Length: 99
Ligand SMILES: [Zn+2]
Image (cartoon, rainbow, N blue to C red):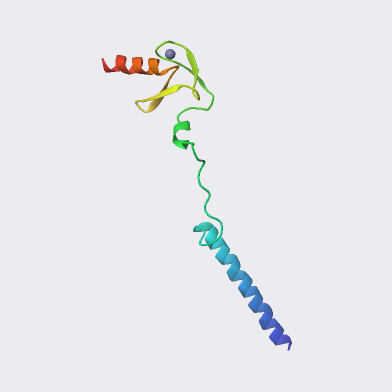
């Protein structure tokens, strides 16, 4: 009788272990069932923010005005970002660089 209880107990442990392994597997290799994967922040491009520190103030190379990198008109220039107070300054810079 005691042996039978031992076997049942072992069986319960085995089932619990299998379930634990299965749930761990799911966590690492994507969910097969249950929670859908969380989508990355919508409407936010993480690649852009890596170029500059958030909230930094930089000088507009055209008019010399200081602009926030968060609010500026950006132009990617030779791997870096240039910041302008307006589209007019941005266009002027592009024209100057082209000539
Ligand atoms: Zn400007």
